[in-house]
Length: 292
Image (cartoon, rainbow, N blue to C red):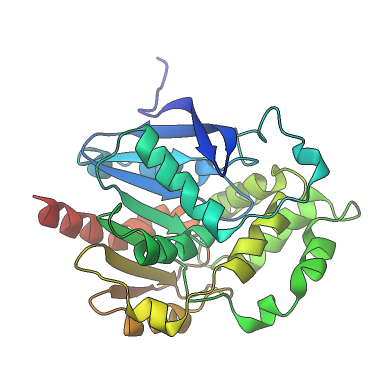
């Protein structure tokens, strides 16, 4: 007999900064809307385990979307995008989940993002607390570590947007960010996703991740968790954002909640979902209780 998953996919047209994009998204479940944002250079496939988690989808409408230039979301048709260097900015990063929420007529969704999506969860809580009931930052921080920022975009492009560097090399580089305890089949899946990205997209995403996302202590302290609760989760083995860096956010944001996740790395949703959900499920239960 054929085996089917409960995931449905489709396209929606979103206009962001006067450009129309054809954006692919997948969804499963019903209940409180939960938007999930992928890491730099990857796409919504990272959330397939979450989309198939019946314990979540029985109470939440989970929506995973591919940012333009990622996955099944092509570059904008009718625009000469090939004449411009691709760089993801903070304003555009925030605009896409906002536009998707409006297009799907979602009522104050929850946003969960990992890596650059984790940074975004903090930016959304800071700038759009009227649009989201909660945000969940996975591997997020006030700003990326200084040693990475100091490389500069020229250095990043030499490393990740270079015709002499194969897609296999970019996939292999992700091994440095994954916990040694993660199952190999999941690690290989993360590598595959990164090997199938468009040229220059990973490097361009890092413009937001390393530079345009930069939350000051004053901005963090001003986040109002009574309007938009901020949850923070970071893996013990993440070399990009350490648990201490995420805890710095929690110390500044009154009312926020932080957990360090043992034996998990930079891609916890994908590299070991059974372990990640041990932290996610209590958060979702708390959000659901507050939403009644």
